[in-house]
Structure formats: C-alpha cells, structure tokens
Image 1 (tube, rainbow, N blue to C red):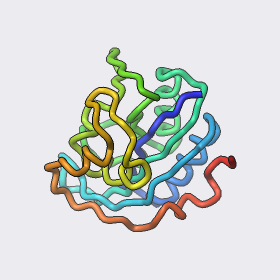
Image 2 (cartoon, rainbow, N blue to C red):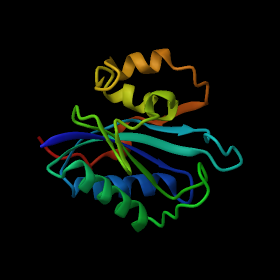
Image 3 (cartoon, one colour):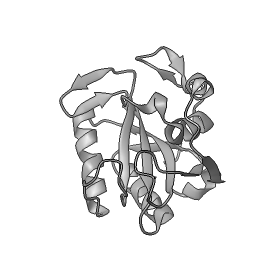
Image 4 (tube, rainbow, N blue to C red):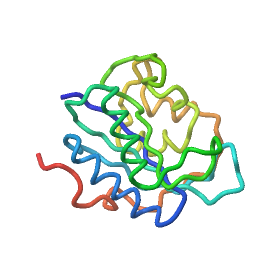
Length: 171
C-alpha cells in the first residue's frame, strides 16, 4: 500500500456535499486515513467566481499512480466536472499531490503536484493535518512550505476534520 495525498476543491453547487461524496468515492479506492479541516478560499487566477471549499485527504491505496489519477478523473466526471476555462469554476477538483515519496514526470502525470508549494489553498489544509510530511522533490515539510509561502490569498477554516465524520477507514 502507498500513501497518496489528494487535494479536494469545489466552488459550484453544494460544495460541502460534493467534497463528502468525493471522500466516499476515495474510500472505495483504498483506506482513507486522514482528512484535513475544511477551508474556504478565494479563487486563484480567474477571480470572478464563487469561493472554493478545499481540503486534503490521505489515502492508502494499492493503485499505481496512473491508475489513481485515472480514478480521480473519473470521480470528477461523476460529479459533473467539465474541463473548460483554465482556473474557472468547477463542481469538483481532485489533485494528486503526493504518491508516497515518488517523483514522477510523465505526460499528464506530475507528482508531487508541480504547483502545490505556491498554493495556500493546498498548504493550509495539508499542514493542518500533516505538518511534518516531507516534499520528496524539495526536501522540506508541508509546515515549512506554508511558513515560507508568499501567496496572500484569503483562506479561512470553516470546520475542523469532523466535517468528514464517518468517512475515515477504521484502524
């Protein structure tokens, strides 16, 4: 089993329900081990859209990185995700942030996620649940990345990890 970290985001419809549904789908891909608090964040890039809800989750899985990415894309599609305007609104966004300590650079698959160290909406929830998690490409922790971040985007915690109650795998 490999520990994969996944970023979750939504800014259309019932955002919280979409993220809970995504977590339930992730739990069918392995063992859902941790879920961050839920954060509301301002959009990046295209500012004229609703705010996002963001979180991160840790999934232990036997799926390889490409198979996991394909599963994430299928979950997004099942939630009505249509890839249109870059940085535009979306029903659901699932990003493969880390896959164990792997560093992968293939067409359509980059792990660790290539921009996570620039994004407060990823680092706030990641550091809240796993501050000592090491970035295998940069050699520093999630907490250190957050502390050094220049991104001043507004991010506020809405709910602690209890928002995902009942979805974590036992043991």
